[in-house]
Length: 243
Image (tube, rainbow, N blue to C red; front, side, top):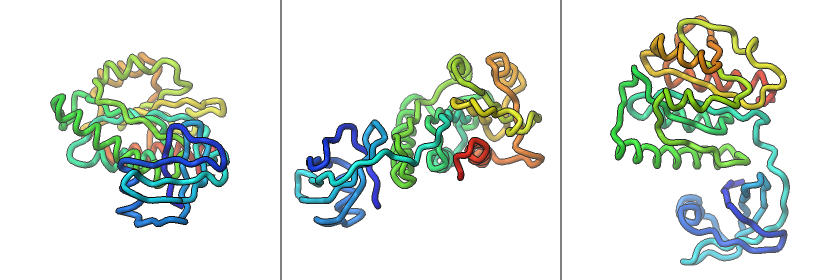
């Protein structure tokens, strides 16, 4: 069943007009036709099973058949702060992190980041990242549209860490096993991953001063684009969200 997001939807029996990129995707990419069925998920995590009634230049008109609560969301809210990597590696990190259940993603600029886009470049990347996130959320049938926030300096990111149940800094210099850090009541978790060259010691000290616990992903040193995915997979497994 193809999955889309919509902000406001009516009751069973009501119609809804899909326009813009979603309508183009339904008609041009998926080549769907009248009578076929899709799901629209609203901002309250309610999935609406809808049948296509009309396709024309105005968009795709659907009628709501049934409604049920989306059961696909993890019960832990994870914000991924990952240091900006070079090339198209962030595209993969964002796509796979959304599929694995990250609720929020923040690209971060650290001292050892090789990629250092100017404002225009960062804005262009953000638009691409958000499109990738939307497509990943649709593909994995998320109940929410996870947010990709603008590129931020590490110092600013550190100031945002209040309010998390657990702040986990994955550091190649060593740390505690993830399983020993996450407790049953931890439902809002911040994850911090460094760039290709890792975090500077002063950056680690800054994050620790904000309550971050250093953690390890095992004896092997993972690539900067692999570490976020391994970390998220471990967290989802430990919290029971891969069952």
